[in-house]
Amino acid sequence: MGMSAGPSSGGGGSSPMVDINTTPLVDVMLVLLIIFMITAPLLAHKVRINLPQQSTNPADKSQIEQKRLELVDLGGFVEYRLNNDPISREILFAEFREEGRKIKDDQPEYKIQADETVPYQVLAEILAAARRSKIERIGFDNLATPSGGVGAPPPAGG
Image (tube, rainbow, N blue to C red; front, side, top):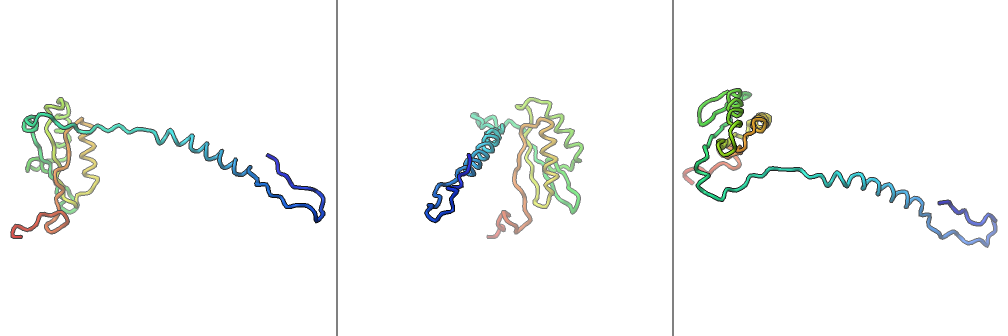
């Protein structure tokens, strides 16, 4: 890994040095090899996700109790409505805990419907509480939008 300085005589008949110094190339390649050896196991890490399985029996879907959770932003205050009845956040979370004690087949299916002005933090708290309570069936129905907004249904006359 040494370096050759060429002939020590200062005469004009000496030829120029044409060898490439590979020491820096080898050093860089070794550093890259070490970096890839360290990061490769991190990239192979798998995240386990429990995806919902489709029922083979269509009659099973009709036997599941449906609960609709509506979230409406009232300008700084979010109103919770479960099946069109106003409910407090604490009572909703208590119901999650009660329903989470049941086996999956006996749990109701919660459909969340929220307008786009509801803060994300509120939705995250609801989903976190459902997960802590072991609620298996929870999802989003339709994200409601103000009339005329993106995704809003067309007017009845047109």
